[in-house]
Image (cartoon, rainbow, N blue to C red):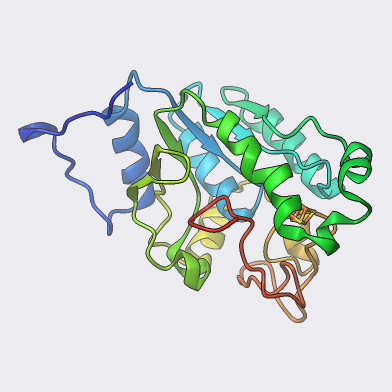
Amino acid sequence: MGLPVLQGAQRPRVGESSHPQELVEWSLKHFAGRRMEMSTSFGMEGCALIDMYARHGVPLVVFYLDTMFFFPETYRLRDRMIERYPNLAFVNRGTTLTPDEQEKLHGPELWKSNPDLCCRIRKVDPMYDALAGVDVWITALRRSQSETRANIRVLDWDWKYHVLKFSPLAGWSRRDVWSYIQTHDVPYNELHEKGYPTVGCTHCTIPVENLVAGEYSREGRWAGSAKKECGLHGEGI
Ligand code: SF4
């Protein structure tokens, strides 16, 4: 399906500085009839955005890529989200390659010997299948999450996956997200209470010292290595 052509009165009255809830509402009107789906890793940002869409009562698909290395806390959150938001469809589009099969193919502990390959197998490549046929990919990315995300636009073309990418939280800070979570009593990952600012795989995510739930850092991801991103967003891998 081709991209919508925006003309005259159809042109958006929202922009980079619009409130995320306004952007969410705009997207539901503007992309009505298009296949719009959201991905999540069950971090705090994703939870806030899921709640914003759920409030509109739309049957949105929220998919995730289960790497088979999720924390138990993440599975528990997924189950709580399913219960809290029955109008949304939570779908796993992760790899079918088991950790044992990966070890037979690439040796033990690939996340140590070649984390880029491990991320490609368990995240980057499955995302191509996950986004097949999707017109608009909703993400909970924020510009202030990292230097590599500093130039994220609310609405942009993703050149890796060739899909329109919509990131309503782009301009928000972690404090904004945390405030939304608390105000609306949104379920969030227990890991944030245990010092984990981000949610990833058990092998590559550690808590960050002295960090509380409302603060953000990427220090706990691939600690001790130069790797900062899994490769899903932006160039690389
Ligand atoms: S985050 Fe670590 S364990 Fe997860 S896919 Fe990437 S390298 Fe593998």
